[in-house]
Image 1: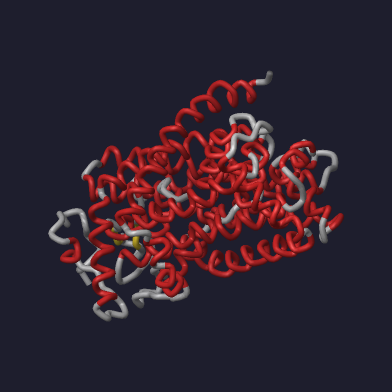
Image 2: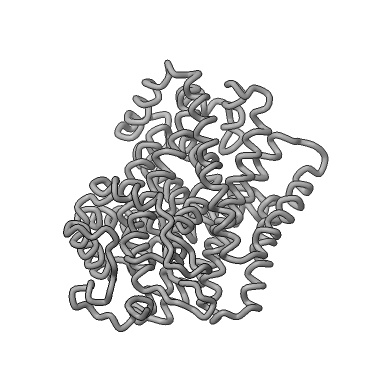
Length: 479
């Protein structure tokens, strides 16, 4: 056993498993509580969410990030290799039932996403660069008055996204390319090529990031859905069996799958959260940068992004796999992650071009996510190091180096690194959101009251908080 396997097995795998038990309690338990308090907002307010999502509201300041641009950055970060390789990994490890739990946790997580993104808007700050900045670090410092905890959360976010998430995206993209183009030193060639592309993306600014996401994310998502839909249509007679397998695997102890229903639940949670990022504190960094008239707007919009990611994009991948064959036949292939999807697409209408096509998808998915991760990491570096340009430069160098290294080391090692830090983020972020939940509930009530009274564009002020302490709120009511 090599050193990377030792790290994977003894340092990351076992602690990660127990950390996810704690994360399960916080993500699912508090998610259900938020769903109850918000009266199923993620379902009852779907029309309002869709209406807000297509608007390009902006206050008139050209440098500010619009609500729709913030949505696109958020979708860009969410829609990544997890929608392809992550779904495949969940099905191989947890069976078809993992898909059901991904769906369920996405619906529950939409409420958590609303809460964290609304809080990011309430406690955001406007800096000298003319942009708004927000996220867990800001609502922990400004809302809870816990500056040390805020710094810790900022540093944890930097490591989780600048290392863990970036590494997984790069590693999976490289894995797909190696499955399509296998030649001498191909791993080094792809590592260098991906690192160069990453450097071009990383050494840019937030406005450029927003513009790139604005154009690429919708096209990327729709194109993958189209490929998945055609592939599934060719196997349409297997759709009923796939649906049955999903629900049977979700509620029955399948002897073919080690751990049975418990394994399906945990893999559904871990890979679902990796994909939609609900509740772990990443999207508030994006939501807090938007210029809107009411915090609830970004809460509703970012909440909508969760089911878009999981119920639509991830489901496309799931049905591509499950309409090909049952779980046992899939397991017998001995393939996992991107190579599994490449093989199945090759059996369909893409034929021999499947590896190349999927590699292209994985590249676009990976780098669209990298755009969002760069935005999240830079925002937290600026928070932790007080806008120190040298710190930002070092962060960019680190992210670029992680891309290179991740293309060369075992992929499962990067998955486990990411899982450990992601579970930590979920626990600490959801605890902070729970402590500040009264602010998000008050903002939501105010928004609904204004809409019910006929106000087309609700406006938020400190008076909207029903007498709650507003001393940590600086970005509202001063224009």
